Image (tube, rainbow, N blue to C red; front, side, top):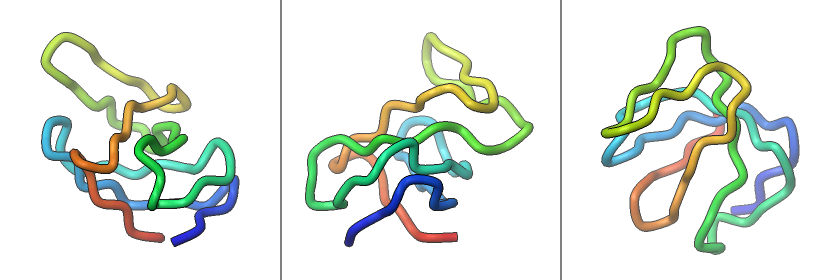
Length: 69
């Protein structure tokens, strides 16, 4: 599925949980890595990192599912 820059997406990540993101550039979900920035007020916590609104989140095809919001 092709995702355009600026598209709001729901991310279901196996490590960081569920969160809302926004595509920071065009990408295809067939690619290994997705270009997504956090688009919610609540911080997302990983094992060693906390992300805040606007920061780029690591999204890998094998670890998360993307749905257009």
